[in-house]
Image (cartoon, rainbow, N blue to C red; front, side, top):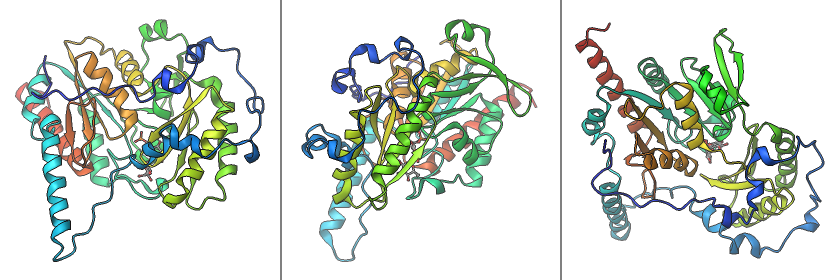
Length: 391
Ligand SMILES: O=P(O)(O)OC[C@H]1O[C@H](O[C@H]2O[C@H](CO)[C@@H](O)[C@H](O)[C@H]2O)[C@H](O)[C@@H](O)[C@@H]1O
């Protein structure tokens, strides 16, 4: 199977490589750590006096990453301003060139479904920026009703999971669909179907029942970090409370520190404070999302591992029978794109209206294109079923 567009895109180096973090490899596997830690024993000191010099976040690349972490707003076209019109034309040309490397999944739809024939599609969806547009207030990132209906239809046709950086509960509250599986906290909190082989490979899986009484598997590989995350969450609330616009969210196994609504000249301050707090937590690390710093446990687990886990729990690991499709917009989705690309199965679709290097194979411009792509997939599936006499 070759789903690769003719111009293969450059493969990213791991944005959170061990060497860049400067973390000893023994810290990477949660299973190698001692027994669960209790709150209060992680920090050496949270005092602002103890903080490093302001050079830190500038020299280690945090500030540059923060500035690059969300597409710039489109400038409004001033009538008569030929310079601005020229710059927008250049952006379009640049985007169109980029699309030669990452063709539109709508344009390449026939090619994609050609590979889906005689295969089971497994659908993986990110939430923010994929199913709901990016908005100023994370609490107001609602899905439209047409998108909800579309995702419900997708889930009726194909096994479907949402893999989000939000906590599982929060993303479920926003999506409100019981027809799918959910993985919250960047895949560190998964509810999937029951599978015996899964329990052999992941002895930490817990069998349980959901609210509807269905048997489910609960997998939480960072369980022992709960008290630490809770403690760092409270500390981060405290050290950012004087920064106007800063917002800290507790996502159970990770914490988000938002700076979207913080004046840009305060980004150094917020970055430096987070950076200094993390010096006291060697078992936590920070990654960059869209105008957000994500604090998470240093464990060998991410959205890519969550995709593999869910495929296994769905009994869909046979490469020849299955076409996994993953749609996402953010850096954390790159781990999932990478898993699909490196195992040469399925396809990653990056949602972006600006050029970005990615491990995805295809692109979609925005959430409305995501909805159109999903609708076309549902229509194609129903046509297939009618052709094969299924109701
Ligand atoms: O993995 P995802 O489902 O994409 O979650 C990633 C982060 O999404 C949310 O933040 C982003 O969307 C917000 C609403 O549009 C926006 O205001 C913010 O600037 C974005 O970073 C969520 O609030 C984060 O906690 C997630 O980690």
